[in-house]
Length: 339
Image 1 (cartoon, rainbow, N blue to C red):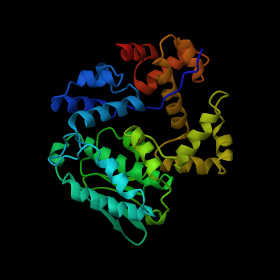
Image 2: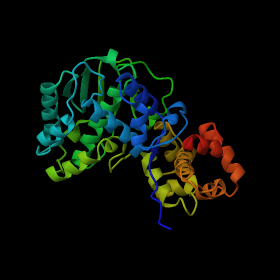
Image 3: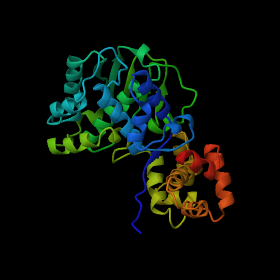
């Protein structure tokens, strides 16, 4: 039997908003979701984990049908292909800083969807976006996608994930922040005058390590690239996930063993994870949950087998843990997925 490729998943953070947006824009939302191999019923279940590839398929479908990379959330559209053309213009620049300055000039010329600026201080660099039509982006989809796109492209350009120091949002703090914590493990400020990401300005002098050929490959993978972490993620949680993924089949190490492998004390590991608003147990649970959701989406794999694959010898214990994670049993999750 061929090996099934395990797929990265994410929470249902964007799906409901994308579905409602498609309806508002007069698109056939049900067909759009089916094209991405998603049942429209997933919209009503915020606890479902969604494969990143399928989420990206919905976004790409909306871009294509509207021919607007702002997804109709600005009075000044971003013509389809804008992000790629920006890449064509900037990919030959020597450093990240030069590329971003040119990118800002490019976007400010082609659209009024937002005014983009790169601002340098003594030790920080801020990519700032003054959104023109926040009233049209009440679900914050365009704002969120803008941040994802520019952080992804900047990190990809230098082949190193840029750790963010601060992210500012021009809207109120959402009730559920779990996804923001995962996407932006840094200081987050809401109700700010502009949308922005801030990082150390040393990255502006980093050499551009990409080419036109690699740009074409990157853009071909968009928008899935926007939801993936670039190589070089320096967060401790990311290092821990990488370590745990290697030992998933044999069983997770203890926190003391993990700390030793990561060349730090147990106390330091706990403190650093706490600073990133997570814990050793939460990282383990998230990995188990993601893998469980993947296997539950495969027909013919029993609940007992799924439990074994994610490290539980008892299916009943697995079911209780799964309910704690997502508020439903594995069987209920599977029924909703295939409904």
